[in-house]
Length: 137
Image 1 (cartoon, rainbow, N blue to C red):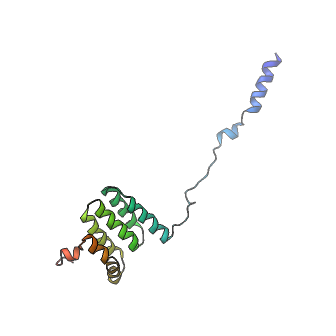
Image 2: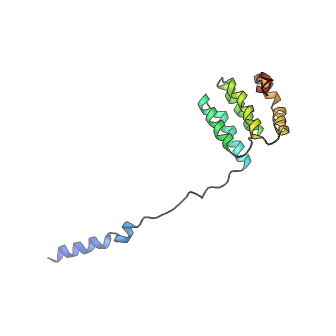
Image 3: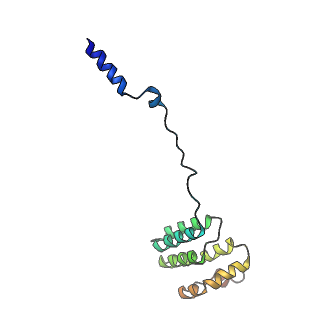
């Protein structure tokens, strides 16, 4: 007769209390990430474009890259243009330069990008929209 009462008492002692079973542990990690520096951003996207294997990946990367509130570095643009040409999409390569033109604050900044990337454009045979359609520029 004592045995069932003792067994029940031991089981109750080993079980967690009702409060411990009901109250969940609330931990939020939403705001615990560090800011990415411009150099880290550039390195991440250069690596992304160097490893992009198809047009969808290149365009997705461009969409994400240009969505940030900054103008990508010339190294990122170079990697993106090479990726566009690697997947054989000339129009995306031309549109990358259109994206730069929209992102920069001054026309002189756009000219600086064009000057910096002139060798790449000549190497890959990329003609700008302004050169293709001078009457609309």
